[in-house]
Image (cartoon, rainbow, N blue to C red; front, side):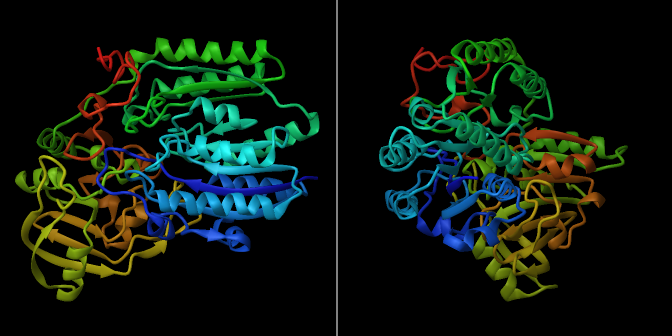
Length: 498
């Protein structure tokens, strides 16, 4: 039975996004629990689908003692501010000092954090932790599937363990896997041997989905190959972080170098062979809506359009209006879109009251190229405080807080407005606003993939729209400056600096 210190610091950084993550952003949480410390952590996360919850529950079940420090997350955005980064890292390091002696440290991290002063946010954190605890104390971390895993991260930790699903329905399970590997490390007294390989192409996040090919088959093969090693992880990367180690990485641990290298190389060969398949059809806003309306005539279930480039789960502000305009232009009936984040319009709708018609210019406030606010006279159908229980597998176990909300109607289109940035990944977000998602012909969701966990069962078909947003599905559209020369900006795509 071990004494294990734990903490969490999660942020996925889109260095091209409009807004940064300050201390307040971590206090709000962006769909996750707000910043919590000490003994308040476990009541806030127990039973939730996050790695720390899975790890701590596994540790308690094994009779381990767990010592909390801080757990926090902020909605994906541009850089974490220096102030927020240093304050949160200090809470973790101070907690380690105060808790000594401990047998191990576990951290619930994302893996794609960029701070104002540190391109490799997690690498710098793990370096400081290693410097404080010394070379021999086990340091383990769980990572998001979208981690941009760096050499410093791999060198500073005994082991890093990544999710295997996107949508991330296995976050808590990843925490349990991390605890099992840590338990083995404590029993053996030896740090596992690691081998890693970096892929030479970026993968658009909408085609990283593990419910579809080729990712589905690659992760199935990962599970088979793991029988030859202690652990394998494949982080498909977050292709919107402008720093030199932004790319997919495969790594493996073994009792010896040969087993680790064989497993990592085998999966790398398969991923390289699958490169051309990491692509798919993107629809312009009008093309997407026309296709969805045509299909809906004979469909028994809704046609779902992913507004993938304005996905707040990838740092966008969730307020562009390209697909809303297309719905209205084409006179869509029984259609709904959400979440459009616009606290000013929500406030005006609350002031007007349910049943009122109010002139609003909604969305379009992030300054995204090619986008503007959409002005019209809207019927206010429902307003609310934005607090309700999640019902889907992604946000499982959470009471969501998306800030004050409003459901507006314009013709046959309903628009769900929120005040806080939260990815539309749970049917409860529509239902809370008075929209029954199963009764719509067309649903537009501001999400790239996570929505699939809850919406696939009610979808006749899912397509990906390419309306304006801060997360282009074609990475070649971004103004990169720091990538290594030769890295391909997409599957079989143009090489950076070439």
